[in-house]
Amino acid sequence: MPVCFLLIGAYLIGSIPFGVIVGRVLRGVDVRKYGSGNIGFSNVLRVLGPGPAAMVLIGDGIKGAAPVLLGRWLLRSWFVGDPDLWLLAVGFAPILGHSFSVFLGFGGGRGVATTGGVLAGLCWPAAAIGLLVWAVSVGVTRYISVGSMAAAASVPIYMALAGKRWEWTVFWCGVALLVVVRHLPNISRLLSGTEVKIGQRVEVEEKSGESAEEGQESLW
Image (cartoon, rainbow, N blue to C red):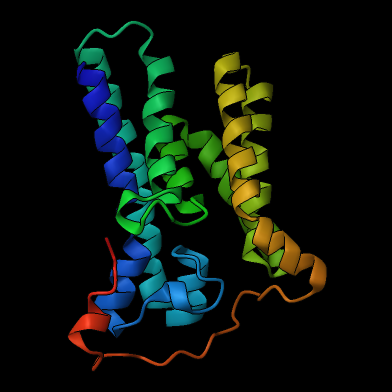
């Protein structure tokens, strides 16, 4: 039973929509209405700029790492059988929360930063390699979406080559597939040549004076 509460808590933490919160609080802007409509780092970067994007990146990363780090300690203190296997479920919960947030009507983002946080908490060498793959891919192509999908694909490859238990490899294959599926709109734009490159900005109309009804348009 305590494990169930741990999984629910991890999901709820992952559901916190930092992209929406930062946009609303700092600029009075709902980032879901601009650019790709995504709530993650890349869309916040092009809509609001590097400062707010960095805040979202850190927040999304922490909400992935924190449940894993806390979960590892709790699972072992509860003497749960095979805690490393249960930890995969704890790690998947915030990814699921970010992608299908209960606070956004089960909508959400691509889950890349949150997935990175989960990976850092589970296996930091894999996270470091994934970050390197992301940086190189983005540097070469100038597309954050390409870097995100390449980084996600690199993780199960690392797990297999590093001799991690097969459940971990299968798990990260599934996560990589989820990341790719969540990027299908980006893939479509890449094929049509309309995907926005890193550094390009989207013009937005800041709504600091919006009405109370508009200001309360559902965040939750």
